[in-house]
Amino acid sequence: MLKVLMFDLDGTLLPLDFDLFFHKYMETIGSYFQNIIEPSIFVKKLMASTYDMINNPGQFTNEQVFMDSFLPAIQQNKDTMYPLFEKFYEEEFPKLKKYAGHSHWSAKAIQKALDKGYRICLATNPVFPRQAIEHRMTWAGIERLPWELVTTYENSYGCKPNPAYFKRICQMLQVAPTECLMVGNDVQEDLVTKTLGMKTFLVTDCLIDRGEPRYEPDYQGSLEDLYNFICGLPDILAAS
Image (cartoon, rainbow, N blue to C red; front, side, top):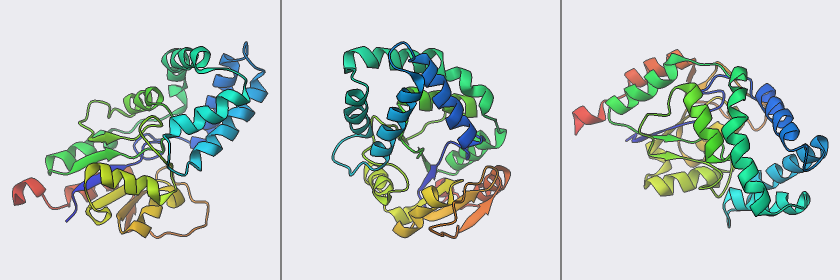
């Protein structure tokens, strides 16, 4: 029986062109730290360390893997950089909202799932600190909903599309993958959950498909279609 609905954030609940958003993010953060290191070098090192984090084998948190790679690369220490990163995400990151969209169907779909008794998890790729994810949740209008788990780089030990990332979520929520539905817009990063036995819903508004590997969604459609799909799910509360 389906118990948990997992939702991706960027391009799913928060409509955006992720390539454009990520480019503007890199441009902004590079400029912000220009007094410490030349922006193009900063961005190059940041990307390399992000790649290391994406390939996290699972022994340490994504945050630790990233920082263990990044801080030595720019010859800085935690005491110097952490307050600056915190200030960046507090003051500058919110300005990137103009590169994101908004859909009222996101909050409506999640609230409908809650009304029917389903547990909810925000399974956004945990390559950002919680500060950055909370800002984007606010932009999407979903920050006040009772999320059972929000994956961030502080609490995660892997990234999409590694199935181990999703396995760990299931372990934390104490459910089997077959009791979960993954909702996302990325064929490769989100639908990899099919290899674990999860059902999948592909949101097509901001679709990302690199071609390979090929996964076929169980269901697909727009955010509005997702809302209607959830409306049609069995009511767990009524059944209990």
